Image (cartoon, rainbow, N blue to C red):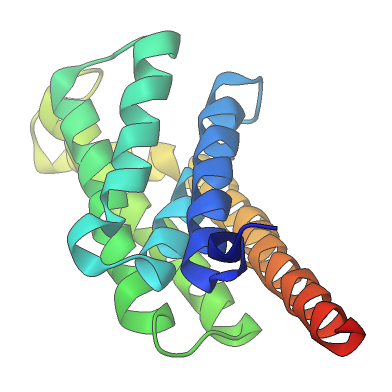
Length: 184
């Protein structure tokens, strides 16, 4: 087997590309509103990739899936993309040095609230369906509450899945290396 395949960064690269493909598909397949893996990918990318490029993974997924599924109001889109850009740094700050179920869960909730606050502000600011008044802003946030539970649920489900898959791949890889070194 190629020695390069034994290197953890090579495994991370393969896993990240696979997760990007998975994330694009999860946004294009039928799903409850806001129940996708893009928030989890933002956290995962922030946790494992260098800061200067971590944000590229979720933004790339958004661009590709929006290009296929359809672009929407540019103001709303900007704020949605901004959420995932910011949530990448949530992953960097809270998960890069120490990862456990409590931190991943906390980040899933935090990323959901960030998305709720910023994306609903963008929706209100776009003027789509809400007057640009304080009452319109409050109404927008109230109407966004049902989507918040889907966002948080999606973040948690997919975060457990993405971080779990990566840990399983690493364990299997380490086991394989151990068995290979013992057989020599």
